[in-house]
Amino acid sequence: MSKELTVEELREKLDEVIAALDEGESVTIVRDGQEIGVFSPSSGLRIVQKGTPYPFRGLELSGGSKELADEAVRLLIEERDYERSGKKYGL
Image 1 (spheres, rainbow, N blue to C red):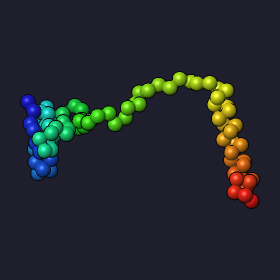
Image 2 (cartoon, rainbow, N blue to C red):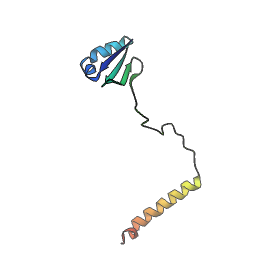
Image 3 (cartoon, helix red, strand yellow):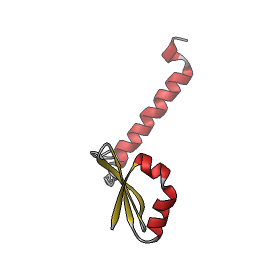
Image 4 (tube, rainbow, N blue to C red):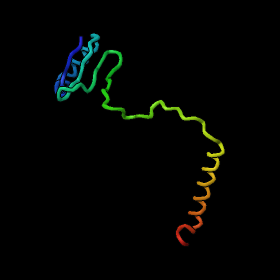
């Protein structure tokens, strides 16, 4: 069995919600008629996501080329040395 509460009702009846969770009941939270989250006894609060906020979560990157990484590091070091020398700023 599942209860459905608005955000305002959740604020007012938090003790009742916790008691319902203790009894194994789920509680759905709604705002403006739209479900925004579900409390369930075992999983806590599950947020209902709109869209995909983290589109690259779980993306595995390949190791890439060591030569390319070494070149990038070399260029970064050269740029920093150039900045520190003052030549970049006309000193």
